[in-house]
Length: 375
Length: 91
Image (cartoon, rainbow over all chains, first blue to last red):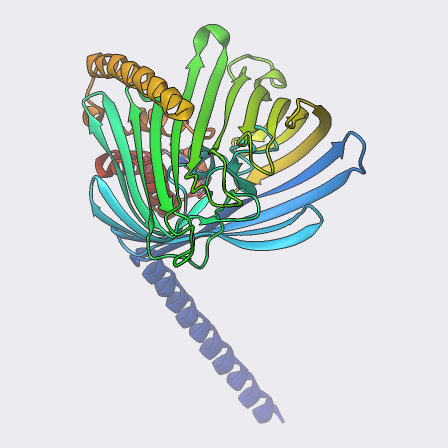
């Protein structure tokens, strides 16, 4: 009996020793695996942002909207990079999933990067650089920027070459791109920017220049041109040309104990007039916005330093003789409360006037609240 | 025609403005490439959004986010490397 117990005891000891050794072995395996992963040259990161809106229009039921935008970043080495963003949202009574961008980037040298895929429009400063919920200082976007219809493409499908070069104390930045370009919509004479299947062989092109004389100031100009008419139709030579100017200034001003942020962008869109029904009018539109924000971030009071005050004016002006001719002007005031460097509450009130031919004006106002979080 | 005229006026005004700014730019102090990573970080990373604290990401994550921002903000290679090196020492 005793012998049996002794054998059992020895067996257990052996088993324990063996398994703990095994565990130690696994431990070092795991460690070496982690080390291998850490010292590996490939790097992957998931980031993105989320937001929820509350909207109370003047004479309509109030609504909640929500959205979540995961961003996937993959760095293979110092030259090869991949970025993609998916937009998942419940908005305007619908649930949408869209590929916001997906682009393979290859760094050619210190001053030039090649990218191909679906990318944010370099000629559209607001969309490319300011639209994510935690960056945009108001819960809404300017009407013309085209995130959901507008006067400028939000994204392009094609390729781009871009970069920046410091020149002494200043800097220039540039982008050239070629893409499917928009298509002509014969119903309203306007163009449709969501072009996943081109109607002609002519590809759209675009150029963007930015100049930063001092780091806090950027002045930009962009040009886009594309044939928009369908091949082998009377409209095949109709093209659309866009000119854009943009402006950005952000500076800490010690006298004001805070940061002033000024942004503006104006777009002029000209679509050829082929003088063939239904397109028999001068097809020129314009739109734009100007925005000022102030955050007293350097005051001592913990509450006030997280507040931010914003005002934006934006408009869209469609051609006088177009079927859907209207001039829309909107003013928005907002107060934000920052929870961290990339999360905030926004409270905004907007007042919109729509002026149709003949001069009659409709006025609408609404309240929009939002919480946004960039991670 | 009205459109073209309006555009020309804007273009001339724009070019004039550019000329003034070029003079201002060239007169400004140190060359960008001679500035420290910390200074470049302060100058470049608060233009579009609030500055993100260095502590918020690991070294490896800053390398990835840094490359992402390089494209987004059209930073040159040398400026990006200096900023990433700074972020990796400050996190």
